[in-house]
Image (cartoon, rainbow, N blue to C red; front, side):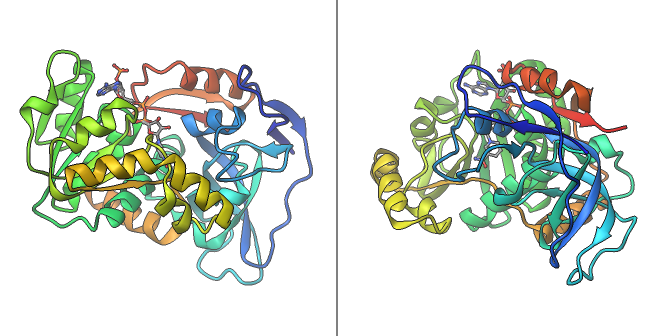
Length: 333
Ligand SMILES: NC(=O)c1ccc[n+]([C@@H]2O[C@H](COP(=O)([O-])OP(=O)(O)OC[C@H]3O[C@@H](n4cnc5c(N)ncnc54)[C@H](OP(=O)(O)O)[C@@H]3O)[C@@H](O)[C@H]2O)c1
């Protein structure tokens, strides 16, 4: 089968190599799916640059791609919740990615059934970002009626995070690119702040939860708008010791991440809030919860550009260059 491989880590070239490889055979707990569409994420480029090596050390060559939609073709002996022909989707488990291929073997625990109203391309935009917000809300122990600030909510994460947070009963405030203000308000955001002309640190106070999609200087700025006891989950800040422990990384890595994330932990203490870092993981049960919610609300993800699989490198380049108006997706014939 055809697959797109990371053959070496390279900060300057994100190019994957299109090669013929063996079709996978399912382990007892896996199914093999024929890939219909795959979401393309900034994470795919981070893996090619070697930026997540400390969290997941892939043995190269590695088939790329973290997010998949496909049809079940072959079943492992221990999988009972799916059958051949089911249309399923997943954020693939960290240690067995490989969505950029004609077939992929996936642990049954990572999969959920795709809501019928979504096309293959639309469904490919859901798992990674939807699980990111589900897992962030879990870490925050988010309660209905409280307020969340989602920074950069005009991007791919926001498109999932805003409707899911609303459906969980939260008040949602977001900021981002003003050209997308109407779209995010239509997703249910209660307040929109234009990041180029307004300063959210002077407009907001007493925020319960923050989903930080920006990192850098912005993380501390977001701590400053929070209530004491607030919970901030960062997607782009520094991983810390608590994160490494949660991920069951070896003790030496836990020590390194504790050092690396110390300044964020210290800042959080000064503001009286909790700082968490997250690296989104596969979870079929959580994804099924999202799928059921989407079936009720008929939420349509925003799609930016669809590429055919052979153009995978153009798709990765598009994602690397920002200015996203929604998800970039690969389509398989
Ligand atoms: N750790 C994890 O598990 C995890 C999971 C999912 C995503 N992520 C990360 O989360 C980040 C966001 O992902 P995404 O898919 O939403 O990105 P995206 O689609 O590129 O969207 C980013 C959005 O933020 C806006 N923005 C840029 N600078 C801003 C600022 N200073 N203040 C407010 N808004 C600003 C952008 O507007 P412009 O068009 O004006 O630039 C854009 O609308 C990425 O870095 C991704 O890697 C991490």
